[in-house]
Length: 319
Ligand SMILES: [Mn+2]
Image (cartoon, rainbow, N blue to C red):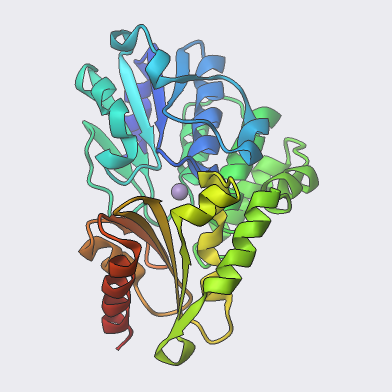
């Protein structure tokens, strides 16, 4: 499937639902808002449909969205576009919108994407789905406004860790360069997305420091955040989200693991690696997915059992 074909399908669309994945991150929400702005500028009726609140750090990107639970005209879309979502679980309840829709499109950059839509465009060479959306808007010959550029910049900057991760390419910088030409305020954007944290997040960071454990001569670093602690400090999912890159920052660590107890017997596992361990293999073993350097899965067991199982698998991959 080429991006030109996706472009043709979108040109024929009139009422479009845009679906970012659950556990909203900067890439999926930035890509979704940018595409909605672009399609609406082209005279279509596009709406971003969510299942949960947007993390406060991304709230400045826009308010033009609707919650799935309050949707009344669910059958009214002729096209549904899923963004940055590796599998159906990431679309969750909103998969019902795909069932009743003529044209379904899936645009993503996860190598593990299950191609669950009618039209799938997956480019794993792109650092962010935002890069693909930039190309798509350009192909559609829609002028990229400052507002769209802000959304796309957030998408790309967050998935590349501020253009620091190795997924960043020359093309990533070329796109960023084009976005900057629209006059976006990168100082303000970067402060909002990278240099602002809630008090709850700071408390989580301190807890992470307290619970950290090292394995394999420090090559593996693990942090556990329990439900009880999350409740004690009234932390939200978004407060927990940003902790995943912390353990692998310890000097000597190759793999960093964050275990978050979501509910009793439900543990979210975030895996990150620095140089050579392909953590997507570990995530896929546990029915999760992701990239070589960043992936995740959910285990339905106690946090202690999850810890043992994940450590065992990570140590296997280390050899
Ligand atoms: Mn992404």
